[in-house]
Length: 297
Image (cartoon, rainbow, N blue to C red; front, side, top):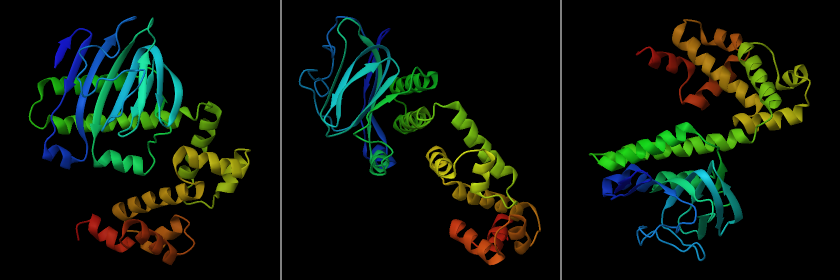
């Protein structure tokens, strides 16, 4: 560990228990790269050192957050890209890459290196892709605070510190995914329409309100509404309505003595038998079994 005002670097050990946790950290730190200085610094460990002219290949993931300055990034799957303050780079194991600050600008960088089965699961399910490794999240105090908390945890390396770093790294990944998704919806008018549609669905849970009628009320085309709604929420409008009905049915089963048939009618299911089938497909329990379980019977 090097602990200076403009540099705090940690390279970490990993044991079998850490690997079994599913996400473990190999390095975390912060450093200021001054204008016209060497990059990487001469103090860079040999295992991580590289020439920006030839690049390198690592065997782990790296999140690199640039908070000041500017430079460039390139990888085997991503063409040469300008990097500005507020950019996060996600480096993939086994993927050639290179990056550097502009010589006359320098930059400030936070990073965390990590690996594990959890990250493999995220990439296998396309939450993160080698083809899109650049995230423009802007300056985010929460992300900076997480990096600093991780650096402090690594400085002391108390028992089970790797598990704390795992949680911090997972939160960082969550913030990046959240920022990327929300950056694709910059139009406040579109967001307002989606929010209004969701409010209508929640307020009219038991009414005969269809997604088509909601689109008509909002004076927008249904095909466009369905596409944008799913992009924003992860559900089609009809699926979202069913999820709301599921949550409401759980509330009624837990807090009332209403018969299952009456709950089905109250929530405007087409029949009690359909409600029972739907509920069991979602929870693994019939409505009656769910009520008994929630009440400890």
